[in-house]
Length: 300
Image: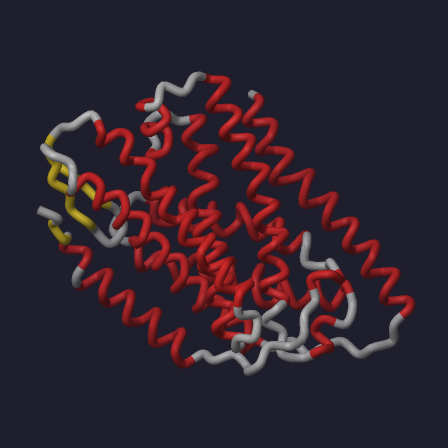
């Protein structure tokens, strides 16, 4: 019940309160400023949706790859990598622990991409958005699994928790910690999405920043869900649609709610966004997933 209550606060109350604070600030700034609003750029929205589709599936591949590698190196286990899952034969008690290595790998991937964004802020809008989505996918593909693992011992992270013999209190603490880390990560990532702005008018006020975050993050995350589905077929409906829906919604509500912050605004990015290479990369990755990985790659 503690975890369920925390989830309710996380998804409903927290973003709502933060969003209200931002809207109040936006109303005040709107009264003080007569700056014209930036034009809506659908090219940015579609490009960002393609970049998120690419980042989600690259991150998911990393998750499955690092679920396979430890098993492949363990005596008695023979693992196979698939485009939307992995399987293994044989028996070894460590297999249960290694069900948590995928989530660990995605967190590391997200942290590395976040570090790259901080070390070299002057990137093109397309490069910045891709790294921001990689960081987003890394954090929000892993952290919800901790919450799910605390509730379901049959999930990947739940199996690892069972191996580590975590009791109810430890599981609840892990879940609440993951829930607290999600808004903290989104708070930081909203700054990175704002850093992809190419016009100063897009960052001129709290209202403009909220609008820009919706344009390049929130709406693209929702558009990308059906674009991710072909990468995951064939699987059950929950795995095909549920996983991208959870990853997309779990963080984007907080990213949107925190996008109003004036401190998040940066100078416009060095170059405009591109749709050519994101589309080509998404198409190429889909072909690899469905023509190569779907057959299975044996690691033995």
